[in-house]
Image (cartoon, rainbow, N blue to C red; front, side, top):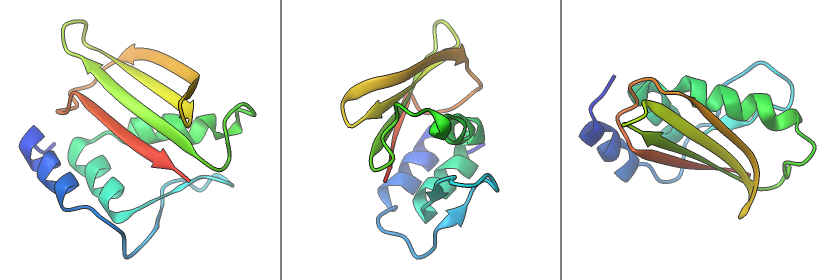
Length: 110
């Protein structure tokens, strides 16, 4: 796993994409941009994207725009994962947290 600063550096250099990457073989699964894939690899947080893909079957989630937030609570060694339709909270999980270096991560699904 990369350090917090290394992941922030990856994120700072991530804009646009040259390739879309298939993350899951499940039908209808979203694809990842170059930058998102680099963050997933660097932070070893594939589990975050697994949750996002799993919840695409939820009929309450917009199929045109979603916001997914990961927030780490170091004191409780847990993470909160929230899925939104723009700003309306649809899904919220509190899960045991692996050693993800960043305090938060936000991704958009179009």
